[in-house]
Image (cartoon, rainbow, N blue to C red):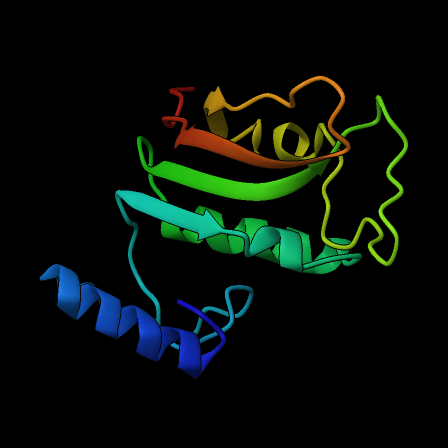
Length: 141
């Protein structure tokens, strides 16, 4: 799913070249109309970070992800994370779309096990972080 019809068109061409036939949808990930069911794999290749400065949108995104997953769903998340060990000061670039270092754990930790995280290398101010999360099972009462 992508909000950009142009991106979906490109993805369809790439899929055809690769010989695969996934379903592509043009739509808004925080308003998932017409999308049903849970998936085995959910991939976010930079979407969450684009919901910048908007906690309500990030909360809605979280609810959308929960609606697309079931216990044992794998969720791949790629985002930019701030590194507070150094001051971020790239001219013309602010912390747009960057997440706080603990935001993924804070937002997803109750519902997902964080199986893998590529940690921030020392000295970097900006990190393209990669997470692999697995949806937790429903606990018996």
